[in-house]
Image (cartoon, rainbow, N blue to C red; front, side, top):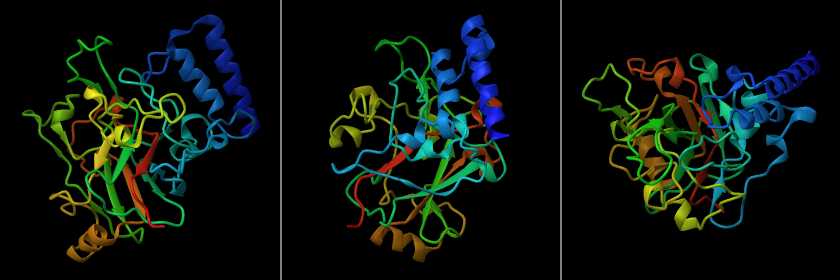
Length: 289
């Protein structure tokens, strides 16, 4: 059955290329052709791409490289969870990454749990880790852009040590009309999936300091950074006690759980076009030896 699905994928890809069928274009990228290639090449077996790539290592950038839970991963196309652990490959301010694993909008497939093999992420100065989805700025594609409108698929991030109890950063949507979705990152406090990124380990590796500078407008690598020392850390999360909060802030954490935002905060005005986040990966600044 899997081989039949692959043959069907290939047939669809070549049909789309040959007929320029506009419905095949992927909404998360300005290039429909690239999206089709990612769909066809991102699967398992002879169509695989993500499981042939490896995350960078050895220079102060530590990639979450182990999948603990991705219940609806099929190993095919954007449902290949290997794409969440094979390194970070941003496509700039105006294009979403295609090296991604897509979460479901609801149910068990709306979350993924990752870890750093054999180590814990340690608290350090400033941002401790960065989550990369694949948002991109909407509008004119140069520096005259106002950079206040992002195509985003918001995520909620939690960390823990036992796969049962999680602590988060108290995400809060602050638009004056809480029932209307607005793609301005200013209104999405403590969410991930809202900041585009230019860091690409292959084509734009950047320095470590540039990578951990998430101010993409002023030359940083982008992505959404989280700090364990943040004053609101521990004010959300399933099973987050004062004891767990203190333990994580002192000694770090083992697991990271990343979820489609509306599955946790059901009142968020997230429609179907913004409900299936895509995970490119997660990096940490410091881990245990």
